[in-house]
Amino acid sequence: MNAPRTRVVRRPVHGVLLLDKPLGLSSNQALQRAKWLLRAEKAGHTGTLDPLATGVLPLCFGAATKFSQGHLDADKTYEATLRLGVTTSTGDAEGEVLAERPVPAIAPEQLEAVRQRFLGRIAQVPPMHSALKKDGKALYEYARAGVEIERSPREVRIIELKMALAGVDESDPAIKIEVTCSKGTYIRTLGEDIGQALGCGAHLTRLRRTATGPFHAAQCLTLEALEALTEPARLLALQPAEVLLHHHAHITLPPEDAGRFLSGMRRRGAWPDAEHVAVFGTQPRALLGSAHVKAGELIPTRLLSPLEIQQTLQTAPSHGTLPQEA
Image 1 (cartoon, rainbow, N blue to C red):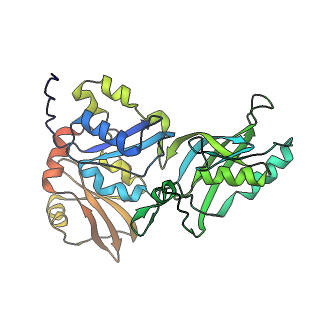
Image 2 (cartoon, rainbow, N blue to C red):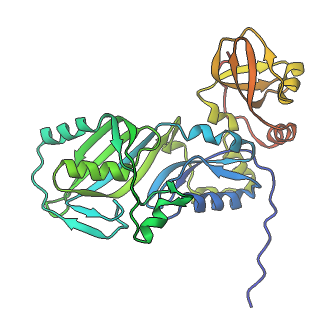
Image 3 (cartoon, rainbow, N blue to C red):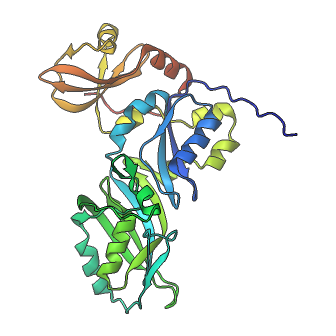
């Protein structure tokens, strides 16, 4: 007879865990594992990584989930390996082989010419094996059923692209790429398009996200490292929620104005117009929420509750000096 499972007692946890997602887990599976290790009540992530991809995946807990949506717009950096001469149904190593073609000798100047073609704003047709939805159903569900859905090209931006031949020998021709790109860019599709431009086709055999917004792989913890920590140390591994507001101006309100701001009221002050503002209170200094400033008015966008602020102050450690306020 199996022993009864121990029930995990959830608790309020607030902050951001910078996770190095392992190979083979979906983003949601990694999130649920971290949520279980932290015994957190509420959690979410800031955009998915394929199971075959590894790397930077910021996970949000408690109050931090209120600001996760803004991070979806962050630029991202990836490293990938393209196997030349073979195309697959998914654009990566999971799919069935569709075609094999000989790989011609590729001169450095040819590689550079192809690289230049994919810099800047380009059009991409989203892959069928993606989480984009049609009539409330993910495209990959149609793909698994053998149904092809027409997709319109979308404009994305390739900010930086490095390419280098990487095959060990002629039997394993490959290219390594490093790309910094805008949101919505599919690296599998980019790999396929590069292979097509080289005249031989390609698919991804390795994909790693090394940065998203201000977060880099060197800052991240693996699930194994998180599990090895004591419970108090796991909480110390969390970054405060305001790290998600890194590009926001900072405004600090005195106690009377802070209370009114938290009730949803606008505040007046000599502030310049700003589209994105992180608002803090004093005594002690704590994040109250996000806002924007227009014509001298501080207008709330997303607010923390007094309970969330209290719990954050009780459990979340300080992680360094905050930027100067506006």
